[in-house]
Image 1 (tube, rainbow, N blue to C red):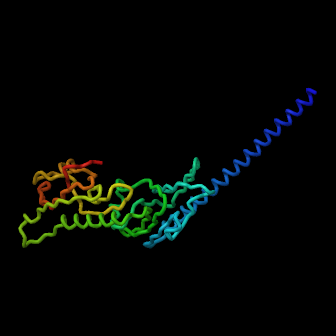
Image 2 (cartoon, rainbow, N blue to C red):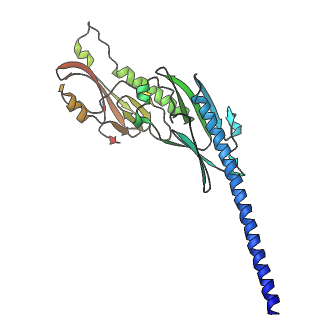
Image 3 (spheres, helix red, strand yellow):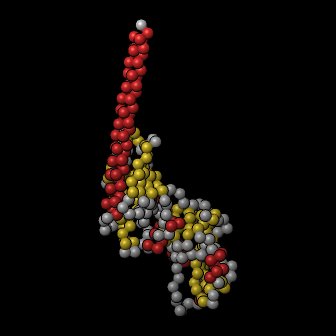
Length: 283
């Protein structure tokens, strides 16, 4: 009787182990299949980006997970019935679903910004201007654009119309109030000019570019600025360098002062452009 019970227990244990093994293999196969599907989706998006990297031409397309916006390229927002997250870096992309992450590299680097106003590669290559990560939830653009006789690829979300209009308007104001050309019929004192501008958006200024702070990256080039208040006529290069901030953030509804001034820089007369305010956050 004891042998019979022992035999039954062995068979029961064996059945449990076999069932667990089968279920383990099944779950492994299912997880592997799900990861393969996620990998295929990541590969499809990466291949689209890589196509732009190997194309010589000014091209812009919309890509979306929302079919109703009628994009040029549409990708299902789910894989295996579950949502996933798409994150771009300058060198590749990552799809994340639960505890699974799939990474794909690009054949060449991209820029995570909207290049609408950019024409100069010097500004484009300013590392402090670049975002290094971009999370996409719905619609984004891939664009190939020639800048300084070389094609570059850009990935960015759609910029709201009011942001674009504000950036364009502020860029024109800065350009019109700072630019100066020599007119020998005028007295040199006409060089000096000061203009106060109230900002409608929180705005970040660098030496030769500005952009609206926040989720959008729409840089606009401007004349080379000294980000400080001029307090005298004569300067050395070291003094101007020490007094000038590299990057400042101005809160919305605050005012900035644009000042065009004739100064002596180590004995040479130059027309210098300054931007400053009493309320400045240095980044």
